[in-house]
Image (tube, rainbow, N blue to C red):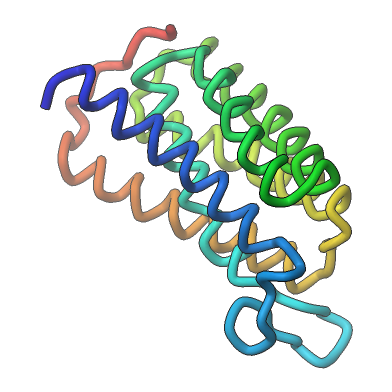
Length: 179
């Protein structure tokens, strides 16, 4: 695969998943039993977006590997359709959370010279809880069920990608230079 194709695929998937996850949080798109589940208790409501949002973080790591710090531009670009689809409240919550967590990822990618799989693991351990808490609080979706499920779904996604990368490159991957 050419570098241009890798950039298009990784950045395009990252932007598309940001839009998809935010679209799933739009009140008009919430269908009880399909995209939202009530846990009937102190845990609150759980949303499909809480389950699949973990892919965004892994896709961001791949996009950042291809375009470096310019991934922040891709994050901002994703904010345009989110603003249009979901309105300013959800867009601001999403972009604020992504920018804060992206800054954490940026620091890990810029100042560590570890393998990709180690950077994915460390950056996710730091950025996932920050992103989840900020977004859910600002968007008004913060419940124990939503927070725990979203953090766990992101952790599962990261663990799967980490394991697949470990299988593919073993321990021989040389650290990638920061962009």
